Length: 95
Image (cartoon, rainbow, N blue to C red):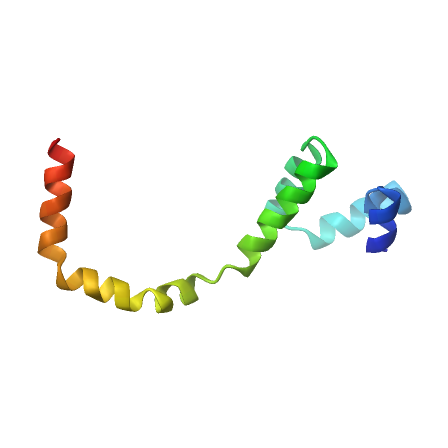
């Protein structure tokens, strides 16, 4: 069905009776998903909609745990020099 909606440039709701689609969507989507869908529909043009989808895909693939694990050495190094960093930031904020 996804390919059909893509190639015909029609939303999924186009292929279902309105009441059925509303029942399915309201039962399967939480408030945040519905809000995201609402704003997505307000995006002008397919190019910007495609860009929004690509951005959401990046967020979906983001793993904050992996970020912390991969940054552990950098964080530890900075903690070793914590006093220098604090002094630097204080001096910078006074300028």
